[in-house]
Amino acid sequence: MEPVLEIRGPVMDGETVDIVCSWNYKSEGKVNLYIKLGEETLTSCTQENTPYPKVTCEPEVDKNFHGKVVTCEVQLVIRSKSETIFVNSDPFFTDCPKNITWVEGEKKAFECKAGGYPPPNVTCSMGSISYKEGETFTVSKSMAGKYICKAHSIDTVSIEIYVHVESKPSILHIDGPPESQVTAGKNVTLTCEAYGDPAPAYSWETPKSDVEISSDGRTVSIWDMKPAYKGTYTCKAQNKHGNDTKSLTLTMPGANKGIREEQRWSIVILTEILPILIYLLY
Image (tube, rainbow, N blue to C red):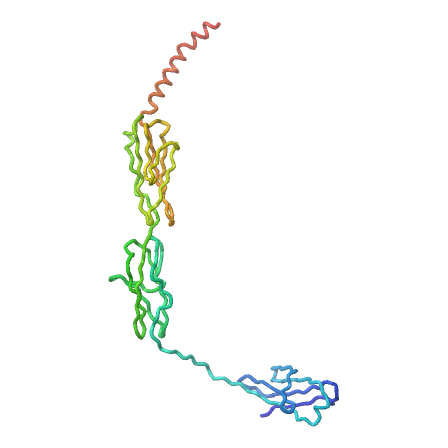
């Protein structure tokens, strides 16, 4: 088996000549063909691979070509099936933050990455409770504390991490007087109680703006209750994780009784007097 070399046409000084090398055999590996002029490999060449490998070079001829030997070389590249080397090594942590802050009620997982071979199994434990790395769960306040995260394969390494659990605000209740005790002239106090971490800030929406709000925002005070202060009082508790609202409505039982009585007497007076006035006028 050898390549076929062909010089096409007369070789003329100052002109190009086609020199062709062919490999007319099917091969399992990759075939590279090179044409050499003496010890120099020609570079201005085009290689084809169908149906068989072939390379064509078109050098520009000069008088120095005279008497030189032209050869064709074949390079057959055959590679074995690849094998991967796996090196056993002790486990080590690559990314495992030592302080984590979660929010109560959210879905979370321990993101504690480790390297080494064989790939280590990572678990994070506090007491008898243990979580696999990447395992999702719903965060609760009881999950706050110190955890030991371990990476285990041919050996075991561990690291301590601290979990802090914060929470969105949740208003527990608004303390205020029973409806039957809200009477005109009385002093009324409404107090909003909320839970959250960080501690929430309080604000109120009230029917009138001239109520007194305590410095911590939790309490609304009304001095000398009047019908104008009736209505809905809404407390809002807010921190960086969200907010919550709750409302209480103040009414004054009997506050409209006097007004309705006055309206009744006005109707009676108009009914009795209006005919007399009309008679006098006409």
